[in-house]
Length: 395
Image 1 (tube, helix red, strand yellow):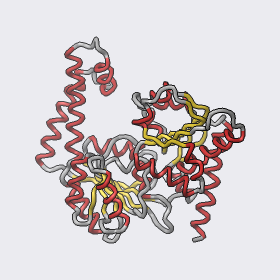
Image 2 (spheres, helix red, strand yellow):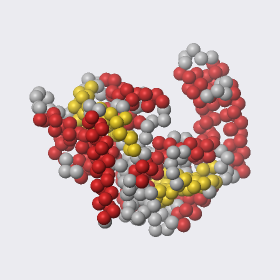
Image 3 (cartoon, helix red, strand yellow):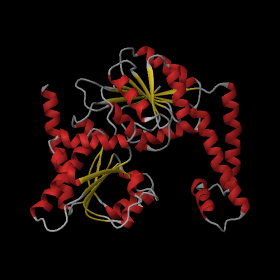
Image 4 (cartoon, one colour):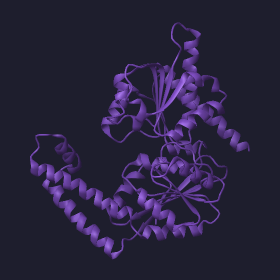
């Protein structure tokens, strides 16, 4: 228990350091912190501090605070955070909304806005909130800087980074458990291999039609430009179609099902989080590990997702299969093993998934197994996504 109390003490000091840096910057900025740091507590304390200042000089309208989150689950989690830290009296002046609701607002004013998982709020649609509304103070939070340069530039404009701490720094400080990442190669079947080769040949062809120089951004430019020649628009559309087809083949590689089954058998008694690349394959992963598994993804109802989490928590179904729904800041307790079966090139997604496994558990090392198709685009995505992470073992 002593190590737990030490962890809480160190975490409290780091959170205070982050909030002090934000305050010194005029109560406008961003906290970039690895999962497990306690960003939600920082958001709660920031709101309470600003509301206290408003109440101390209260004139006119009641103070208003807004917390923006990506999911309804995080709405509930933030309400629980206020209760957890004995701050529930502030909730009467706080709105907690999802980005997909708030971006429609116009001419609203808040004393403080807190943006959780802000990289999602920077998308062209959701950033309308910042364009059409006003606020005195702004706190943005996420696990790592957005990889899109456009989003980074926008974040620097509206909320410059005041405090940053990496996932591995959180591990070294004892704020989260240490972890090991095991990269496990799988092979395509002969049929899958033939399909992948066929699609990849088309991909290369259309890439050259686009000029072969930064073809991805060129395709994006061509489709956005109404004056683009029809043959270039066709090349861009086919190029993107090949990317999707190629990804689907590696996402649904059947050997991943067998590899997952072996990992589950080797770790009986452990709670295991499994991430698929698409909902349909996540369902297949769950079927391959029945009756130990349950499913949590966007295709399930709120009731089904609640039942899935309850079954995972009480150990009835110790294998929880998800796609993206558990990426964004949602607490999943007592998970010590993770299996990633669907990849992108983004390090943010990987950091979030690793973070689901390494919330502080005394004397526990999080074990993450990443299944990837060797000698495919998926291997390149994996190398990019774990580039900045330590303790990565290639098998």
